Length: 392
Image 1 (tube, rainbow, N blue to C red):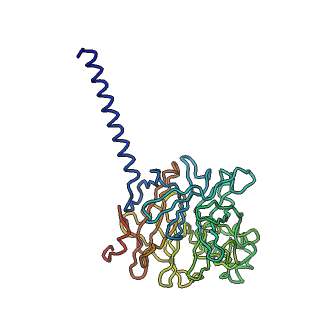
Image 2 (cartoon, one colour):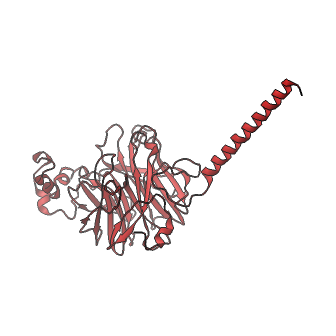
Image 3 (tube, one colour):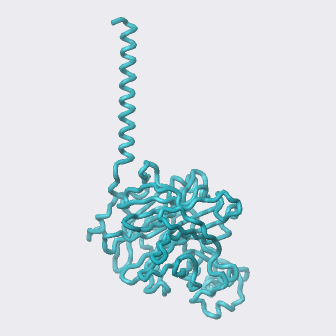
């Protein structure tokens, strides 16, 4: 063999080897993306069926006809504004998620409240057994207006994955007093300008309807929110109101598309947001967050014997390292696990405001101690944890 032929042969062998290695590497990468998951790893990248990190932040979850559905905010790399809409994923086991597409798309109509560039947060979907409709509620802020609108948005669909039709948005329960505000609070004349925020007098004024009176005619503010369907089929919208100082619980009409006018305010002046609610043994449990912008803080726990209260505040349900920051996350939903008794998952987000699309998900099992929920950190866990009795 001549020197040139030898060189050519060696070069060809090197190319073949390189291609083989490259193909092998691609195969391994593809395999890693498509290998079924069998556990949760809180705070890590969570690939969908396409190998792409799930993009459904501030999520809401629905179990319907044997599948779980995850609805959430589609985030970009530089903005928390809505340029796509609400995404949907489906799963049969909670570990592996299939991308179902955009359930509610933003509009290109500049006159639409959900025009591209608005803010859509914390979408939640519930199913109405009577009408056969899927109803979505979400927090909406109008494009270019910051967080001043504090609107609640509604959409509906005949199909769980959508597309959802936008029905409208606005403030909540205009011209209606909460059921638990006494007459003295309805007729008081003190305004927010009359008291200095953060003082005992200011907190007392909030409990006496300070912001409710201010917003009475135009409707109550609605920001961080969730929707809850009770055992009897009645549905409730729970949202941060009154400049995020107080939570409201509002009853929905039988078709879930509007409000009955019955509502209460909870923990006035407590500065709660990110409500997540569940029910166990006749008691209502609500885990919330404080208000520190995009930064995490300690979770709060409220309980009640009835949806209408009275609601009692308890200490932080998180224990162990990172408990004072809710393990560097903020709750969004609490999901009952199908087929397991008293099994609930606390679902939360780790917000990344400088790169929103990289926001991570923190799911943790809920345990009970002395009748109250307890959350502790696990680097990795699976649903079999609910079958164990020595986890705490």
